[in-house]
Structure formats: structure tokens, C-alpha cells
Amino acid sequence: MVWLHGGGEGGLLDGGHDYYDNETPLRANRGALGFATPEAQRLFGGAYVLAPQATSAWMLDGDGFTPLVLEAIREVAAAHRIDPDRVHVVGCSNGGYMSLKMVAEHPGLFATSTPICCGIGPRDGSGTYFVSDAELAAMTTPTWLVASSDDTTLDPEDNTLHAHGLIDGSIMTMYDGVTRDGNTYPGHWSWIYVARNDPRHHGRSIWEWMARTRR
Image (cartoon, rainbow, N blue to C red; front, side):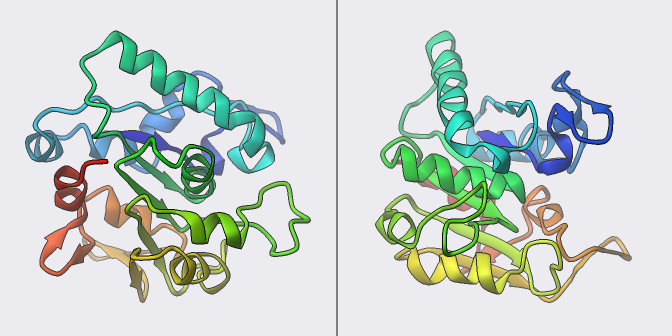
């Protein structure tokens, strides 16, 4: 399981924050930790969880970060008993963009891709991050997109819905809002659901879908 964190968990962020210790991606959003829970590990039959940390934010230099993430994956795969047909990439927000970027650059690497509240960049390619329509349409990696319709950080129509319309066979879960245990969260926080195995499609949960899908 390759977990790609959001923008707030990068290492050296503007504003004086210095989080480049790899602890923040593990503590924040429960993304990596969710896949390390006993429930997830039972479903996957035991799984390594790789949570690389960007020095800043994935969206600031997707072209530069892509080979570094690939290097980390290869390093772990070389050192441990990793099934090359069962490498899954999951990312939220900034990491949702990066999960699509990794699939676009390395289409045969991953068994599944799960971009959560993802960004794909302005359609004219003017931003620092960009996944083109042609790249999205060419994706054959099984993809499950997750977002909430009230997301005000990365517009779900311009990003998640747009990607879903272009990625052939992709699954999409679009929530009306983000609530959990009686608490209501900002709409951007739809990763809360994936980290707790909530999204379902045809009676199968998202973790079950990952666990049963091979490259």
C-alpha cells in the first residue's frame, strides 16, 4: 500500500513549518495507519504500508517527485517480499493528484489507484500540477475516486467528476458531506471514509476491492 499524503503533511512548507521527519504523514488523516489496522491487514493477508513524504507538496513539482516515489517503491520491493502484482496507490488531496500522476507516468505498476478529493490541475496546463485529459483517458489501472460534493478546496466537479468521466471503467463514490461518529467535517476531508473502509460499490468495500484486485 503506497499512501500519498495531503498538502498539509509535506516537509518544508511556507510559513515556517518544518515537518520533514516523516511523522506527520503517519499521524495525520489516518491514511497510512488505516491500512496498518488489524482489519485491513486481515483483508490484505498482511501488507506493507509505504508512506513517503514530499519535501514540500506534491502539486508543486509532480515531475520531480514522481521518480522519487518510484525509487522508494522499488527500494521497499527489493528489501521485502512484495508481490509486484499487488502494489496499490492511494492519495488524498495533493496525494490524490500524485496518485493519478504516478499512474500516468507508470501505467503498468499499480494494481489499483484510489485518488481521494484529488486535484488534476487547470485544463490549460497553466498550473504547477496537471494531469491531461489524454493521460486520464489512457488510464487502464482500476481506479476508485472518492470525494464529497461540498468540497470547497478542490472542486469535485472540475476534478473528481472530470477524471471519472475520462477514466474508463472507474468507480466513483461522491458523498453529500463528511460526517463521522456524530461529527461534521469540512467537505474536503473525504479521506476519513477511505481510512475507515466506508465506500462501497456493488456490496463490496473499497478495501475488499483493493485486496481482490491484481495487476
